[in-house]
Length: 233
Image (cartoon, rainbow, N blue to C red; front, side):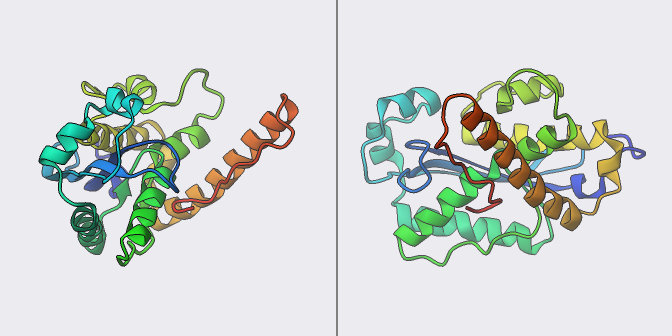
């Protein structure tokens, strides 16, 4: 990474991703998880992953995406309360070192983790004050780019390799490298302190949700609502 364009917050990043039973943060359960740390050139210097028996059937549609069946989860997975507590502890530890936590579409992963903690009577992860969400940032700094904003599409746009999409580890590492690539591509981010960047993302996420809601209402869904609360809904 070029020293002239590197944002200090991008030098060392914690990365986080979940694969789950579905898309509803209120009812979905964690199936796999990954917490890692990347160095300034995107190299993995720490990593930990989990497979969890969610205690419910994993829908076939979800298994097709992330590759974990109910049978495999029951055979190999930890019990949810133990694993969720370990995930929270791992994130608390890296945040305690002052590392930004990168998660693509962070409001999904962090909200679902919050609901899992509530489900099992655990102390929830304190809302981190330094979250970096490449999805929110990319939409803000390159608002009018056409095309999808999935992790795969965004990684391709920024020249980041993502070989095994929807594997929690592969997605987390790719998200971190995309965050570093965005920092290189947009020099104004290089001078932004991570706390200020976090605050900007709170505003950007709200604005993006408001714009999307207005578009949906103007295009055939007059009752549509969505939340832009970030990083935990």
